[in-house]
Image (cartoon, rainbow, N blue to C red):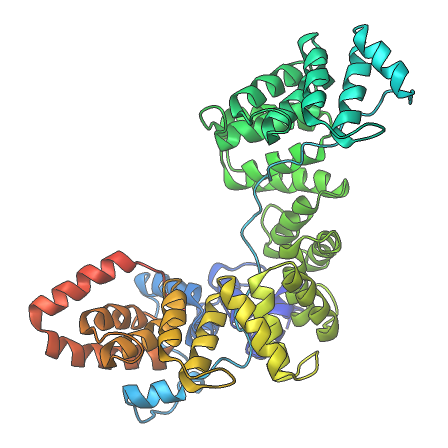
Length: 504
């Protein structure tokens, strides 16, 4: 048998260990013939395994195969023996937090061009004593005026005075000095020493940009892209990013790459995005390193290269980018592009968690609960779970809801469980949709409302988790019989207002 490409071998290793995302990726490789001969039997096998774990994209891929006339029945060895169906009450009692956060592929959405830090200030004027600087500025020396403005803005040798800084930047700007125009634009942009004004910031960035100032060109592009002070126009923003990028500005290279990756204002070109991200990444732009790592990991715009993806992800993580810290932790956990190292993964999960990344906080909660890569500590697990739930992580909200429902390490509080399940269900968490439907149907922790229960259970019925979907369907059958046509119509109306995409 021919040796599998490295990425496929890595997918297979993780897939056979039960990783749902790896199972999906391996199934897609066989479905599409990516780096391996196309083999629909293998595709069906691995996609079914991923779907059985609730990996929603796998279910969609199987539906596409079915629409093409492919038999998507799981192989005989994967078909479980029939089990006694649980009642709704039994299922509710048996639902527990997952023992590991399965199927989390990391933060794959590209980062958009950030609102720039308007610094650095222009400080290319030779050092001079303050009195000399004042004399030169009063005499109309634009460079001295900018330097004096910097001194007042920073409180360097004088009392900090943003209004006085605006005065001197304005003098230089009105005399046509690009550095003064840029600095004055910054003050209007941030509302320092002057009332904040997008229109004035745009005006002065434009003046400096037309004079060739790369920082102004980049900031101007960002304002136009975001529609600040003018109508949003990504195509015009791209023109200014190109001008700044031609001068090697790392932020502009990154921003232009983001436009090419998304096809916003320019024709989508992932290879061009990779090229631009790489140039910005080589200058140390953390967001570019992160986006480049994602594209290399996914094989978009360039050949898949997990080792290089890990390299750039680590560089961004070391600069303190929480999304990169989280993704690098996941790569260390799975041994993708780097040797598997759970202790190192915990370090990066903790760095991201401390920076407020909810998904990292949830992973830390699970790892403390299991004692993997870190000491087993139920209090730490609970503390991180609370933080992740407060930050909006649906899995943490679900787990914490279960704890309150059972009084597990927290006060027994059915109303709080309902609140947490509702938050997670609103994000499409299938188990939370199911449990919320049960509680609405029984009136536990909330007013009994069978129409709302029907709405949530109908969403849970779409879960890729078979036990949850089957139980939800049984509950729906019972509720439908009790509600009658008018009640079911009301439930359908409420469901239409919910519209979350259910995962698992």
